[in-house]
Image 1: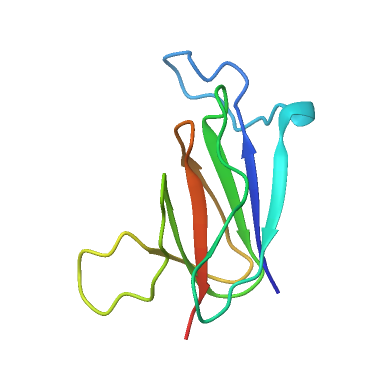
Image 2 (image 1 turned 180 degrees about the horizontal axis):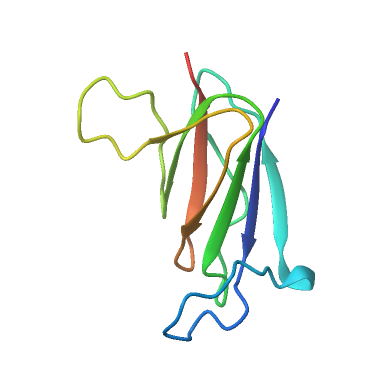
Amino acid sequence: MALIVTFTSHVLASRPVHVAPLSVGAAARTEQLEPATASAVTTLAAEAGEDVVELLAQEDCWYAIGADPDAEIPSAPGSASRPLLAGERTEKSVSPGDKVAVIAAA
């Protein structure tokens, strides 16, 4: 089981109206992370022009995004980690240099 991470950009992302999430296919880069009991971090980082990361969970997990992310199972409010359930997909904005970290849910 894994978390599939895809860095991409959206077609016409700079328009001031909502644009359907259409990935620029040839430019999309994908990596598969294996959640474990310790935080795993992508080797890929968002590059210039990539403004979106798409996450697809194959198992329940917690993820964090940032320049030096550390996914954790929160024990108190204020954690940067967010939950993602098996089978769910989410898209998040990223900045150049951002990576994704993931840890398996308990």
